[in-house]
Image (cartoon, rainbow, N blue to C red; front, side):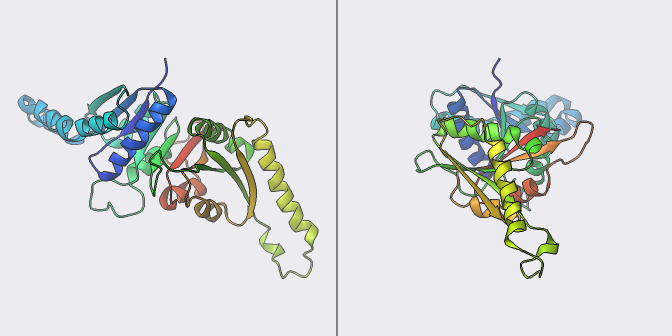
Length: 287
């Protein structure tokens, strides 16, 4: 059975933007959309007020979930949409939902007093734990009418990029987008440009290594995808943030170590989730 696209909502403007993206994503993939709302208050109310437990669920369905359902159906009229209010905290709910989703879509901020801070803690934590690709909708994102389309793909070490490469290429095929694949490289600090022993050959060797990594990661790219490969000297975080301006999506991999718990993102994924100018897809890589 095909797994649905899942979107988490909380009534914020950010989560409604996530609904738009998720509806488009589901339509592109030919999959149903599942809208989930996690409510700890509902669980508390059911425990304390046993006879009035349904009221909270009705309010949430009538306001948050139903609004998201209507928004998705207006955006994609023929889309199959299901909804559920789940009495638990948002992070455990969304991590569980990721186990039975093709992709999980989230907004970048919630409804609390810290809404103007960088990235909501729920989105960050879920992106660092989920078993499926997580798209965090931040910055400007395409409304389906803009051209040309460009997906930025950050190329890391081969073992930490394979799933991200596949995800980016498949997204590009669906969207008719160009993939800009970038491998950042840096010379060792001991070989600063003013070092008396530095010659052109060592620096060229570092860049050549980046080119080889880029070519190896993309050797199976389908002929139908327009591909722009480039290397860039500098921090991968800065290079990808610069490239995110005007992009439709930025895709990065995140290593998942079996048996390890907590946030598993890496510095690059962590930084772009906080600062990218476009939506970010974090794709788990089992190592």
